[in-house]
Image 1: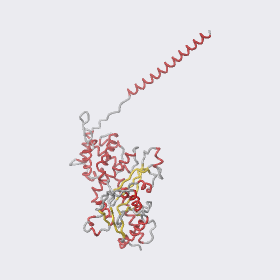
Image 2 (image 1 turned 180 degrees about the vertical axis):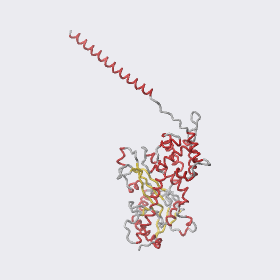
Image 3 (image 1 turned 180 degrees about the horizontal axis):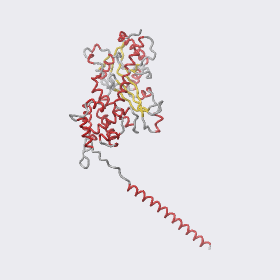
Image 4 (image 1 turned 90 degrees about the horizontal axis):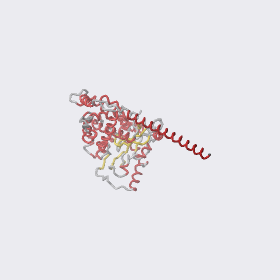
Length: 434
């Protein structure tokens, strides 16, 4: 009897378990069907017919036709460069970058023109506007505008980077030395400093590394600029917590000198001969043979005159930063991208475009005519040795020897004292310290 009741109990439990399993399975099946039905009924992204041909014709009639609506000075203001330079860039991009070549789609309809794509990228860089701000005029969507910007900066870097962000050639160095000499600083080839670009969408995990006193994450750009605002060296990427000395420790600014690839320079200051060109800096930089700082508390007329001239000439790099940010608001406003590599490409492309504009317009605002140095080279106190062989094999011993010369404090002090005397002899008759 007990055995029979136990069997009935087991059967009831098995039946109840089967019912619970069937019910759960039914619920899961219904839930899966509902999800599939919802995904099938989900609306697709709406297609917007933007009439891109109309956008191209409007752009062409406004700026590029023979009787354009807007004159050349408005083109220069809105595109940040003269029309021939912009057309040169567009022609190179459309000839060598597949993305900027106008093609037909599957229906036989032409895509956006190279002018539309390049204009969209330039407008975003010049005005720092979001990607969908160019939609109404140029007739391209937000994602397309971002693709235009990404391909534009990569094209600028690949096509023009080797020429417009090059290391100075011997001819470039001689021109820089000539300008430095007429400004009272023989052997000077530019000024060096750092600027910060705020990174609005910095990943949370990195914010502590990229944030310093301002409370906002930034990325550092180290640059060397000359009097005509040409940027000869650009090192972008160190986190914002680093100061100028920490950035200098990571910078490749002296790599060519250390590895024996830099042209040899000779110049004479106050009767003493030197063989390492130098940069003008602010007070935070170390006292090396390749840096010349101002005098913080000048005592006497000679020191005051030197400090005045050094601080005036050193502003070249500050002016270059200001012009770069004024031309391309994208590097003035906080960076909206998440990808640091893409941010770096934008900065690099802006510097290359800046140098292209400087080359195109330099003759219109430069203050010095370096041709006055052309006749007798014997009058120059600063010269580049054009016969110096720069492809010399380097080894650790040579590199350490050159490194010690670059960081020599004794040479720094002697050079600075000679420059103080040289500037006093060159400019003191034009000064009144009474």
